[in-house]
Image 1 (spheres, helix red, strand yellow):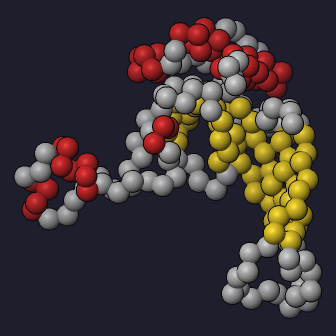
Image 2: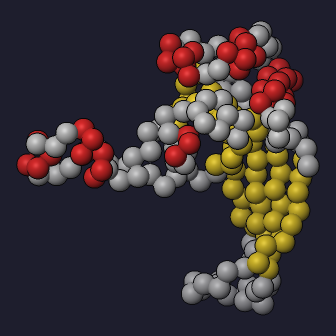
Length: 195
């Protein structure tokens, strides 16, 4: 399989889940046991907000930080953290860490009608799992910190990103699809040499 920034299409069949949801009339006899899925890696467009080469930062991994009532006045920070709710969308290895967008994709599910979901593929550039890739399509538990042609300028970013990745990010690239692909391929192949 090609890397996620190359345009490609993958076809596979996925089994249906038995649900109690009502199927619209006229579609009862169509594919009750399985349906076809097409996953396509697509090119960027200047109209999109999330684009290849952009650097994003994950949240801290907690949903609610505040306790209710008078007890929170007397708790230390360590005791308060025990009560915070963990966000299941954010893995432990990506809390407060940086990642780069390395691709965009569309998943088309052919059930009784076609359903399309769009998403992005991220690769970690800081933290304990540098080089690890993961797809996100429904939820976005991160915020954009740096757009593609710009280099990481915040001091905390320069502290947590390793030197070899900062060198790749500080090279000059054209603001084109080819420039984005060049940056992403350099990062991908340099970080995944071992694997």
